[in-house]
Length: 100
Image 1 (cartoon, helix red, strand yellow):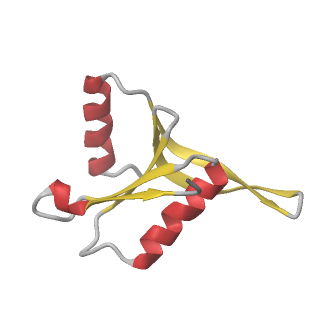
Image 2 (cartoon, rainbow, N blue to C red; image 1 turned 135 degrees about the vertical axis):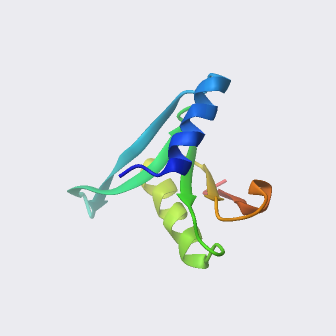
């Protein structure tokens, strides 16, 4: 089921003309063995930034770990955690960089 937050965000990205993919499957390999697609990131924008969307009271370290895992698996370097459960959206955004 798609969240209303994700739906609204995709509308905003479309208005801005930014390409995006939703529910991107990420392959998992272990010691050279392909384990298939086990993880799914919420969105990838412009083929550059992984977005992980939340609606929680506050972001926890486990959310950072989840996004870092998605960055590792996708080979992308930039990620945004976006928590929609805040009065001001700017207070619910956290960026992460992997391997730079």
